[in-house]
Structure formats: C-alpha cells, structure tokens
Image (cartoon, rainbow, N blue to C red):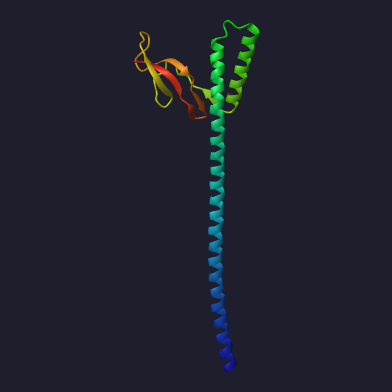
Amino acid sequence: MEGTEQDTRGRVEDSSEIERLKEELHAEHERYLRLLADFDNFRRRSERERSTAARSGKREIILALLDVLDGYDRALQHMDDAPASIAEGVEALHRKFLGLLQAQGVTPMLALGEVFNPELHDAIGLMESEELEPGTVAEEVQRGYRWGDEVLRPARVRVVQ
C-alpha cells in the first residue's frame, strides 16, 4: 500500500510541477512576444526619425540652392546687353539647374493671375490694377516652389487691392 500511495503522491507532484512549468513557459512566451513587438516598434520609430532627419537636411540644402537659382533668374532678366554666347550659356545653366531640382521633386509654383492664397503666397505689397480683380496676384517678386505636396518656399508677391 505504501508504494501505491507514494506513486500517487509522486504523480500529483509531477502533475503540479508540469502545470507550473507550463505556466512559466507561457509567461516566458508572452514576455518574448512583448519584447519582439517592442523591438519592432523601436525599429520603425528609428527608421521614421532617420528619414525625417534626412529629409530635413535635404530641405535645407534645396532652400540654399533656390537662392542660387534666384540669382540666375535675376541675371537672365538683364541679359539683353550681353553677348549671345554668354546669354545662351547662362540660360543653359539655368535649365540644367531647374532640371536638377525637378529631378528631386522640386517644382516652381505659378502665382501671376492667381487668387492670393496665404498658404502659397507671401504678400509683400499691394498694387492698383484696372485689369485684375482685387485679391489677385499682380506681380511675382520671387518665385515659390513645391517639394512634392509640400510648399517649400511661398512665392513673394504683390496683390491687387
């Protein structure tokens, strides 16, 4: 009898040990899944932050290049007295510069004749006009640019009052 009682007690102890180990395994598996999810979130957040930082740096460089492009625009306005070869050279460089920016997704915005929009235009003055409606952009002092869907730089304009 004593052997049977000991076998039953041993099986009960083995059974409770197995249950305890199953619970411990389940808890460790849950911890593993949480750590895996945390790591995946960390990886995505790091990638998003890296991408944002890269875009921000690229934005700063493009804005600086737009200042150079403005210089080309001003130079082209005064090419009337320049020899043809110089004018053609400056125009070719201007086209190449615009092509480079467009390859990066930077495109000029049209402002003349458009209704003033503070999200797209920076009004620097008012003008009188017989031909245009009040609130219409009459003069573009500095061209505005988009970068994809984002306004990279608003156009500086004069608006009909």
